[in-house]
Amino acid sequence: MSAVAMGALALLAQATTSAARDPLKPSNGYHSSTTSSGTRNQYHPSSPGGHAGVDVTPRASSSKHTEREAIAALPLDRLTPQQRAKVESVTARTTVFRRMPAQVVRCDPEMYLFLVEHPEVLANIWGLAAEQQGPTGIQEIALTRTGPDTLTAHDGLGTEGNVEILYRSHDKHLLYASGSYDGPLFLKPVEGAGLLYLTTVYSRDPNGAYYITCQLDTFIALERSGTELLARTFSPIVGKVADASFVQSLAFVQMLSDVCELNPAGIGRLTPRLDHVDPDVCNEFSRLALKAATRAEQRRMSARVPEAVTAQPLRPTAADLRATR
Image 1 (cartoon, helix red, strand yellow):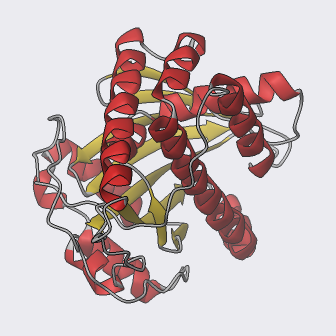
Image 2 (cartoon, one colour; image 1 turned 180 degrees about the vertical axis):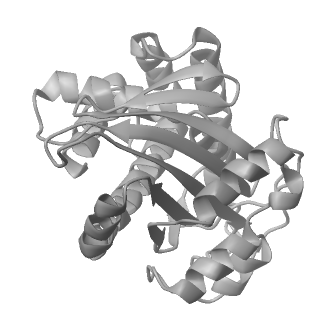
């Protein structure tokens, strides 16, 4: 995944050759108002300081205690009976559970939310990067939007599936995926389902810069008992690979946000090449890039004032993270 990420960065660099590479200081996040599922999430910057905290312990976990805690945090009361049944069909027979290590990234909050809710944009950028630099040996996933809350996914190596956004708000996203794998690892096709539960904390530092803290819980339920044993046997290895992918993906989101802030016109030149993304979504991407650049310029102007206070990055605590669940 890192090779594709580097290729995607090279692609963005080409699109933004006129960008002024001003250094961006580390900073902390954003605060926003809650919205109901299915509506567009909007943000209003909080007062400087945001979520003042100490450390988020960047440790992954697959323990039963953490799994029970994660299940209890799922927003089941916000789901329809049909959606709740899908969730419980996974949590009742989870083969592999993994809580990814919490990550803190610098990112424009509106751009972050847009990318979370439109993963096909990131997938298309990564795909273009892979085409440009040639075969990378890195598994890629193609995402196609099929509805406001649904996508199809395939990796070209035997995995195909459907993804549904069951719940979304400014700080919680719950996704359900179902699909199959038909490849050399197993003698017969394997079917399964999974849940992704992303929790987000937004905060700001005294300079007005934004930090975002993310925690991702994953649940996977496989259909065949033989594959369950294999999955559990290799889950420590698979978990570490998934952790690394999560970290690298968020790092790429941060770097993409930086590009948007430094040269939104470059994003405007890139979007016509996103041939797997709806034109209206591409236009929204360009519009948010311009807004991110405007906010970043306002911060840089404020930082030039002699009385401006330079603060160390504020890292929301694990308690802050749990409080949003």
